[in-house]
Picture 1: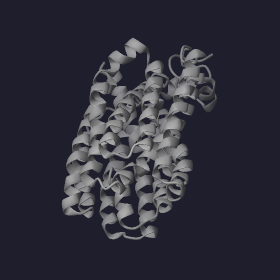
Picture 2 (picture 1 turned 30 degrees about the vertical axis):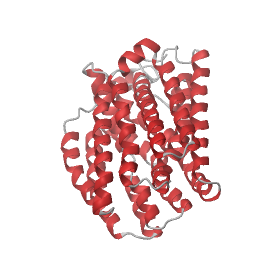
Picture 3 (picture 1 turned 90 degrees about the vertical axis):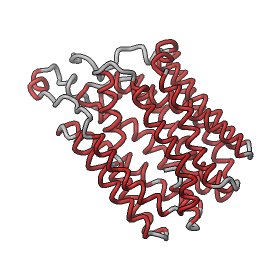
Picture 4 (picture 1 turned 180 degrees about the horizontal axis):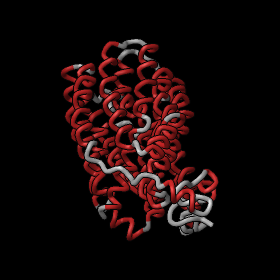
Length: 378
């Protein structure tokens, strides 16, 4: 993942073309991911659809070896995004619900993903420098096999109780509607904030590796950019439960957005690769706290039969609509005004997300009982 856009840049694609390729994932996350996640919840197909998503994505990566120009890369990027679109929402939903069921802090489970990502980024930067970028598609495809095996051990949520739906008052407990979502003001504030941070993360994720590459740092430091950021997530995820109990989840998430905003501003204001790595670690700390906090907040406000759907709704906001709009724009900015402007804009968006959460906290939007979870709504 850290080297995808660096590979596109090495092929000679412009910033605008890289930005367009990067819109494939948010496009599918917005328009396809929620529908597939809803289907998985309604049909009780969470594990089945997750396995299909993982396996098909791994197989498709091989075809990137043969694509060298913009048009075939765009087709492959769209197919990859289509297959990938339900993966994170279904996986996060299943794991968050398992954590609740087995009384384990979600952050203590999620930190293993950050650890493996950090090690892979640090090691693979040196490997691709020596072996060439095409090797990464083969290695990644092969590594989906143990992921498939691990996913078979996940526990699905309980099937939807049709009798409960027919006998409940308005069926709201088992089958929440868009009206229920719009009445949960805490959830609306969360979705607005994650959309803004999605703007920031979209800009950062698309061009941070390209930025380091253009500074002449080499692929080892590109890998270190993402690897050190992921390593910085580990202690935060380990102690996320303690942080949430001390500060409260909304306050902790607002603080996390502020850290991310400061880190992105740092990216835009400095030119020394070693100092950029320090800001990347600050970004990792903030990301860990808001990622775990947002997933947990969604899980608290969702009935079990709708966990994947509502996680997908959050992903559609943070990885769908916002990047879809801003990623091509950031490509134009990189071509016209330079890469630092992108990171300054990303920092402003993340700080605005922190402001939205602060306003919701002051307005006590998170204090009310969630309308999507719990018993029937009369």
